[in-house]
Amino acid sequence: MKSGREKFPSSTSGMTALQVAIKAATCAGDITLNWFTKVLNVSYKGRANPVTQADLEAEAAVLDILQKEFPKYPILAEESGLSTGSSTYRWYVDPLDGTRNFVQGIPHFCTAIALADNNEVIVAATYDPIRKELFTAEKGKGAYLNERLISVSRRLDLENSMIGFDLGYSDEEAAKAIELISRIWPNMQSFRLMGSSALAMAYTACGRIDLYYHQTLSPWDVAGGILMVREAGGTCQDRYNRPSRPETQSIIASNKNLLQNFLAASNGSSWIS
Image 1 (cartoon, rainbow, N blue to C red):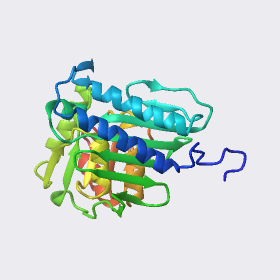
Image 2 (image 1 turned 90 degrees about the vertical axis):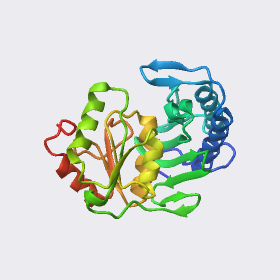
Image 3 (image 1 turned 135 degrees about the vertical axis):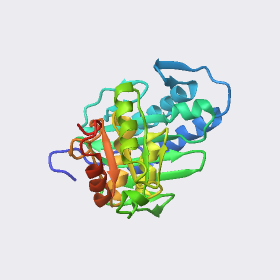
Image 4 (image 1 turned 180 degrees about the vertical axis):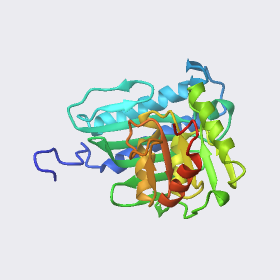
């Protein structure tokens, strides 16, 4: 209980915030899975930035759950923007992260739900409906994959590391991200263009990739991942050496030592400058 503040959580049905996030994420995941590989009407919010019926239907289902359970909490969702609310808590919703993968029939996408208190993320649920993998975290309680405790990679050197990154929607910034990889290569094990930043952050939290970086993220892409990586023993910061928050566009996520080695290798690159 916080003095002078509303009690947290305050679900109308008595569920915890994490339970609500899980319910919303798995519901949306079931919807996107039902649409996957079907013929879709695809529209574009910008070049290479598609939106489908699956995105819209999944988001509507998530919003319905969150608004019923926490009617005072504002929600920032990818497709519908920011709803009004009187609380200092805020939900972040990406109903289908990895829509480009989804449209192409590539089975690598997820739903990402997070709750923040005054811009500090305290609950996260990321669900991959293809693999039935549920990544969760609560502040101070660790990070989990299907209820199994997870931790970030312990690798310290870039030479043996798998690095993940994505291009985003800014051609100029994407070119910098590619230049950075070419700067480090071949002094790394390999790299992957993930296609879903939320799932990439979850993979970083469980050590599947050793480090992830991105330069033009939206809050719903990364809010939950920040908490997961930190609760899994890792660290998240932006490319200007500031701690990550949902509203910071760029991110580097890894264990502390590998992150510092990555920054040293990046020194002087256009991505950092």
